[in-house]
Length: 250
Image 1 (cartoon, rainbow, N blue to C red):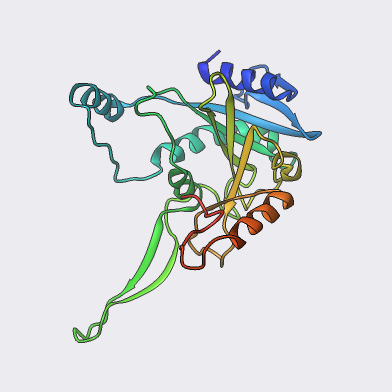
Image 2: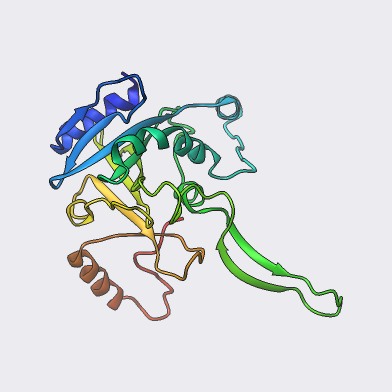
């Protein structure tokens, strides 16, 4: 059993979520069958492990107390995990029930962490702005649509059996685990959000409302009570403060 699987089982015990580990057969299948609000959900658990760039950054950080990390392909690690998990989830979830790819970061705490933006562009495509350059050099450059571009792993006709990408992580409270769920708006079988959103051990995000393929970030899905409380808080802000409540992530 991997560290990520041990942590997921610990989370399910902590959260009182019925969890069954699925037996391995000749064909690879997902890892777990759980119940959320009476709804069956298939879960495939994958680990994020340190690669060579991570190890170099960690050495620099420990030796020089600073390090730089970057990639020309933002979200590539998440895309690879989706690619590695899709068949396992599809075999048990497609056409039947929600399926979740759950990721757990096993890297050293100094470099651990998955940015919501990485998940966003891996799921829906790179952030793209169309630029129009006229043949007439006197004409100004025009900027067009701000949209999701190439590189998407999920879409209306692509891996719709994946209902969400989840991140299992430790909170600041010792030994307490939390799951952040990034809802797939194209899922054939969405997660039972009405049951999940009120929970304190899970946080659910979905892309903010917008036009078809319009680029937008994550917004947290909250209960009606939380939404009303947020509105009340906003009403007390000074008009010139520039503060924004419930801002999208990513």
